[in-house]
Length: 414
Image 1 (cartoon, rainbow, N blue to C red):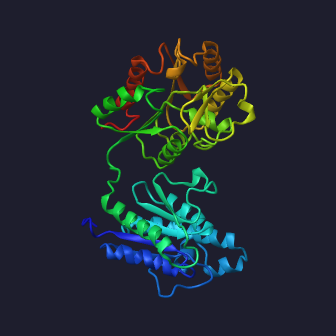
Image 2: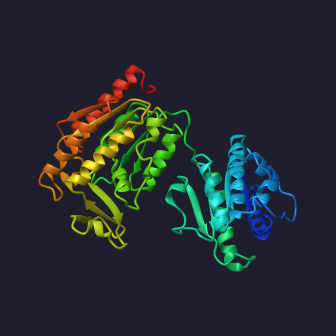
Image 3: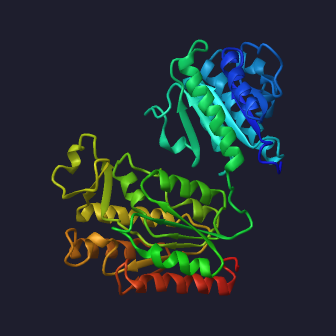
């Protein structure tokens, strides 16, 4: 579909109970010049008129049937049958070029299904969830696809009214506008995935990004504050990168020390499992970020803290906790099927831990580096560097290793 005004939106929901609302969104999309495909994920009832993809089509795509969903006698099990089928069907339809964006409507049941459906679609496909629980803590961060959009479905649980139409019409217009405007990732250009924090803490990307771009690679830098790491890991699992420069692994420490600001238990594993070459450095290993506006867990009461802003507070780890972080790095990297080089800057791994800075702890750094060396898997090449992670020498060492991998054919040459 080359005409930007000729976009098709997949409208998904339980048409037996939300026919009016789904129909209203379809009308808005058509009124703006878009086209609509409808997918019914109902179990018990039927839509008022046939849709392009029926509930029977959905269940069958997942290897089941509506009768099996009914016979289960459990609405949660039945909806999981539909969720599997909807995700598989949507992925197939998109791969066949049938639609350009998707909007789905639901309460908690529909939202549960919607999260699976969005996760099945590639980055760059507009995905809008209109939900009664948008932005709710009921939704675990690990289930959110990297570019999922959510709109709160307010005041519309049973029928149309002017309040809910305001949300539904926005969602319909947003997904169509996004489908017309989106510039999707170029699948043919080799891409580097890099992790970091803001320049006040980590600075290597300032030199590395233009240097890698000069070599013909696209560079995507992910903000390693939980959701950024989840997006990075998700794309790595899809094989989206030619190589990764994973130089801020703080989210792994967040996870093992119980912070809500986590990229999940699989942080630092998906590139390796996909065989993607990894350059790794444990940037800001000494900090655990916690939600600044929530009550501080008792375990951190005697720790030094850095209030970054009203959203985020950083806890400074003690020596034993740092060694635990080192062992977690070793365990994750041991799973890699591709080449891994672990860079250990001996003068520090974050701007705030430089000599003379507020969080400098030479003894704590020594404990961490010693544990990293002792537990580093044999399959990982470990390189000690006589520099700080924010020194030019660190970026130069990373580029030298990358260039060697390109010369050796380990990384795809541009």
